[in-house]
Length: 452
Image: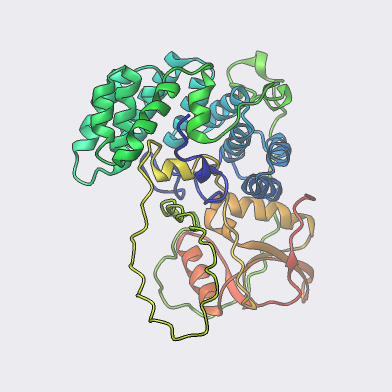
């Protein structure tokens, strides 16, 4: 079997943002938040632990924790995409398909998620359905990824047309050409496959590559090709996604028959007006970069050449020794190019999207409000985090404060790298319509939203 990018899914780049997602508030197919209706901060910790387990290769733990996160926040698109990734890594293609579809129903603008959905659909011998999924996101996918997936879906002629054009574009790399060669092979045109592959594969490795493709072109099971390309071992038994995690449809107001399908939303308790403390006017500063800025992923490094074992020479006799000739420099032999998804798609196969919480050590905090009841702090944080997404990149904290009006409970965020960074953040929050001021930490402790 061809093994092209399986290692990219295990030890490299497993934490980051989905390629199709950026920060809220922008426009276009890459602008939607990765979350569904809202962010449930009480489950981010569980999901982060699931992501860490997936990074370490502890797939069973990743599945268990991901299911917990989805159960706690059933309408969170990011958690459901993470669950799909965990199922994919476990070789549970049917379960992954269900999780990906649920995530896309909450947030359709996720082209890279559609690519993963197509792969697990192909692995279940549902090529027609996979083609429909790929065509829906064709304009948003890397042509090399689209072409390879189409070839796996049983349409090598379409794949050859797409990849041939991509290979002629300026900047086309060896991966695009090898995908084209593989598409020719899957079409049965072995002469064209050999001719294209020979552009990047050394002559002494070309026959072995063609033999691999001959085996690859006749898989015993529908899942064999996807498994070979992704390095995932198909599960012997896939029980499917638990019924309790199924995404329930939202009731429509005009349909009284569905009124009991979901509990009525709990009315938001309006917190007491915050006790505002005056702060010095901050100078205008540039708006900070969104905490969910796109992450760039480096291409997977080529494996180092294997060391050559040389037997130790016998000790030289105790006589004059002729000077040793200087060793000749031999260039390391580069590995032959292979077919595979683009580095971005490969590195994103097991990624999920969660806000990265800042860990700065500054003693400055940004206070958001003060309330006469401890219970209002959690409600206020949920409201603030939903209205101002940039707040999710910092840790919420609370402190008890004795004021002239009695005991109040302050809500703040911390984790800034410096006092200046805290002031810049507060200034940008004010420009967005919020209220805040910067002060020194005074008994502020993390807000406990839920036990993990």
